Image (cartoon, rainbow, N blue to C red; front, side):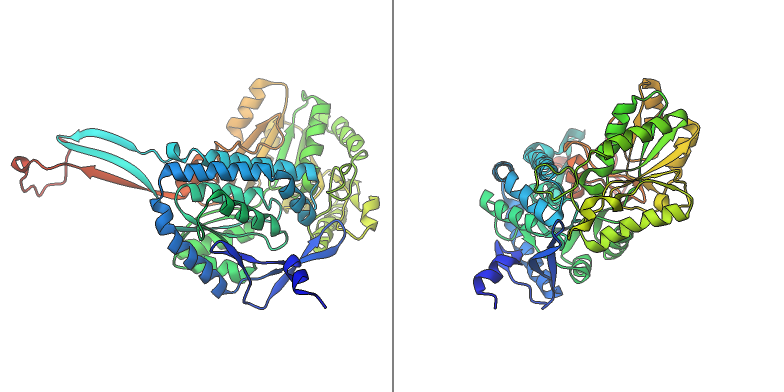
Length: 504
């Protein structure tokens, strides 16, 4: 029988009002180690009442937090940044254990999260408004930005540390209270982040965290005291969250799926392009919304490029993320691994060529959720391997004859998250960034994730909402503008005027 100590160690709790809180629903989920296939923890799922309790705590805390001086908020964010940076190794080990990605990849994730906290440290500057003196005789006009109140974030399994920091750093720095619902598949990194926020000085209730499934999500979407919702995940869920939350009067940014194309022109450096395709296609086992999943090879570049990719894939070591020699880890669950692998069968049946079959990798005979790097050649629109977001280590190659054919292929795809071009021709690269209908573009850069002082987000079915995530648009999302028109009265100038106000 499990002891109380064992239960405490293996049960992941909510974080409400500055301390761990048990779930009350009676429902829970298993947290697995994808490298071993073993259950390593249990996470309690939130009931609607648990969400209500967290929102009530956030609403109460937001009153004083909003009134806190910007200099004090910045001081807390600086302390938070230092604690996250100091605990990068600890965060990375938790992420690697629960998510499966390699330790070096998890360390990179933590580093990118730190960059977003660093951006939020500049909140006194970011919240500066505008002031116009003498807009009319004796009248001044100025704009200020104020927090929304209680806001929420629903985050995915593939970046369990970075994406929460994308959201909560700006939200809290701007004076809101933040409710986080992380993925139930790898929840522990978020709990550690909440503990570090408290240690940094974030007041109790300003950052709350609930775990769970659709019950928790739906209560977040319909709770009247939650003013805005941020989401990162698949397109069907993003669309559901956007439609449901906006119908309930909330501000929403919902980032959906992706089918990122990497265009390789005939003049490209083959070795550089192959390095990029392998790195961006198989890093984090392809479980990145910015992963390259389609290589668009123009003309004669296809055969040498595929051969160069094949040579590199043969050297990739697949294994546990905590093994320093591993370059690629397992997928998040057995079910997801099997779904990704099924695309190799359908691709072959639909006329594509499975050039590299990751099911033959020796790691697939282990208990973990492994699938080796896979390559599909001669993919085309209409095939499932092209049309669907695979979200795994399966890279497809589409062969085209011209640049015009390539740009048409990319622009006709329903997704518009990220894309890249590999070429040595500056004019071709500039034309591509002008022509392509995608939100984030790389020129000889395969994963063009913006730095923290820009904003992240795609176009078309990759984004539901008007504002991108983090950076300047993140500050805009978590605040609302108020314009004040001010005149200190001169009684002698006062009069009745029924006309529409004019500038005089």
